[in-house]
Image 1 (cartoon, rainbow, N blue to C red):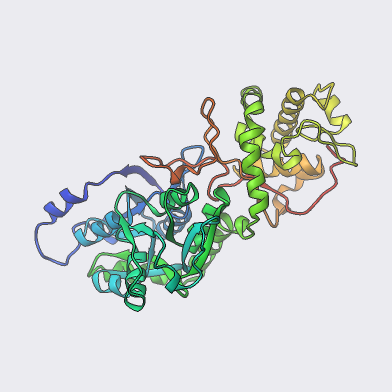
Image 2: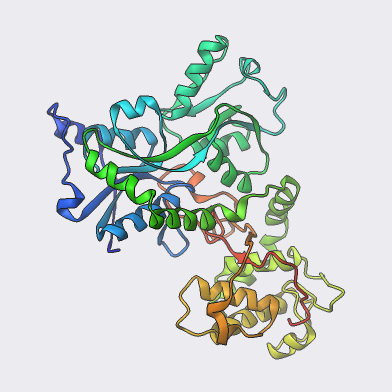
Length: 447
């Protein structure tokens, strides 16, 4: 697909003024006529973001890309700040599709043309795990501070609960997204919030102190919307999503963005967060220097080192591997490491070995597959990788989260999309753009 990188910030107020008239007809041309699909979205780990290479990524991006490819269309993305702003573009008829993690609701179906559904979620009340008392039933929410994103489906859910439990109160926040509110709950700046289960699933990887207090809904569908009267496009999108091609696209999206985060281990994630704060600052410059010398990304090297040794320079295994990068004696000799327990030597040596694994793979292997295979080769040894890469499948991936900004003296483990301000960037390990390794346990005697 020819991707137009114009991710513009549309001023909704101006658009509404220009819309002026009362016609239900969309104000943009149909992609069937123009060959351009204009899509409104918002920044987030479950919608659209830029990866560490500044390339677009995210579940909604992946699905829209595949749909547009199937139709031979160019995509123009319109990045907006909130769900309310996305809905406003639909109301104004200034977009062809809204793909922003929107819940299919009867109230929205009356205003817009419902497109295909792609993800099932539940809406969850989320609090800090130290919140006391933790609300477990709707009538226990009455004394809890609840803040939700204005214009979201959560407002409708809470309005319904309020009718059934009159003591419930909540605040709509027009400035902060769901991800930002979840980070505020984790920092105990806000009592509780409501979020879709897929967003919670991702955000708990970054903020393990978030706890699901209760489900507030049954199964709900996330999907696309078109402006009112845009039936042709909505019907075509549903037809594609329900086809074999659309089903395969949905499967690829789920495997890439959600397969590696099914299991949540609060203890392991809290340990990782502590080590990011306590251990990583000592070695962050060494990882950066190794990147400069070898071309292997510093965040990838740090994630690899954590997977191998938890950033413990004295780590050792009964199989004989030792140090920050868990090198064998033979491999250490190959890459010029004289003391495997010297963290600086180990990091540099491990980076050289990974770069060598990467270099030996055929250049015809596209990224990120080539890096994934190099990482697998780091664990398994040279083996048959270069000659039979096309037959290799890496089942069951896991993500070692080393999600932080590589700024000078800054290692805050906060996902980019959850921070205030204009931020579309996610690092290699944030969200689901993960550092991947084999999930099976292998002997490390080859390294």
